[in-house]
Amino acid sequence: MKETTVVLEVAIPTYNRPNQLKDCLRALVNCAEYLGYEDRQKVGIRVHNNSTEALDEYNAVVSSFTGIFSRLNIGLFKYTITGVNIGAPQNNYSVIMSSESEFTWYMPDDDLPRLDSLVVLMSVIDEFKPNLIIGGAESPLAVDYSISDNRDQRVPHHAEENSISCVVEGERCYEFFFGTNIIAAQNLVYNSRLLRAYVAANSMRGLVDPFLPAFLALICLNRNGPMVLLRLGIGIFRYNEPCSEWRHEWNRYALEVWPRTYRTWRKLGLVRPTPSHHSYFISSLYFYQCRLWCLFFGKYRLNLLTVARFYPFELFLMLFQAPFVCLQKVVKRSQRYLKLP
Image (cartoon, rainbow, N blue to C red; front, side, top):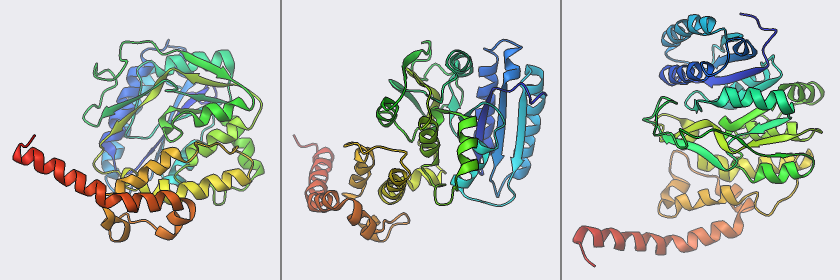
């Protein structure tokens, strides 16, 4: 396999989920088959394994796909093992920043690439040489975890062709970026050269956290050049995954980590204040309205001092409304049980 011809690398971090990685790689095989034989040389796949379990299963998965990608004429297939759990943010950073190509597409191991994604991305890269590509500007794609094949016709917009929603430059990039779901990391494709230049000139201390994919996108936007938004998602988010710590810790990330992260980005000059920058994350607070015990005793309990500091009014309102919301739910469930009108 030749590494020098690679234009786009798919960066896949993985942790204790060999079966999910297998599904993701199989989906990339399907995507590659849509590309011309010579164009496949421009695509690379890089897997960074942060696992502490099932390493033999991982080796079997990687071995089975090495020959497949070689026969498909994929330009690069590289597998790395950390040997110790360095944490999800560090693993994400490692796999993205290990990329040697011009562009890097971040693809979590438990999500799937849309079937036409590689064709669309290579076309956009060839035409615009953008700083950043974002999929799903109009229709992000999400499926239940039971769907493990990107050819499944239950995938939303399965038969539609993806297309460019808009091309944006300058200050408007920030407005458009924060108008998308910035945590849908499977929809982000970075200009790798811009990331490497930033890291070479700046310390990343304190910046590698659960919102790293969005931070790297802002680095790309902070340079002159276009951002391309695609109408449909390029990555397919799979929800209801039973074993993901990230999914279970989301409320803590949204209410404790996010405000600190956003404040740091402001200091670095990578974001502009917007009225709605917290709105998506504040909604996580209402998860606790009828689960108040989780605030104090749950496995993923919150630091209330931090929440009160950044969301004082919203926290007070949630606590004030909690008894009424709980009572309303009890009444509704009682009516269903007793079959009352």
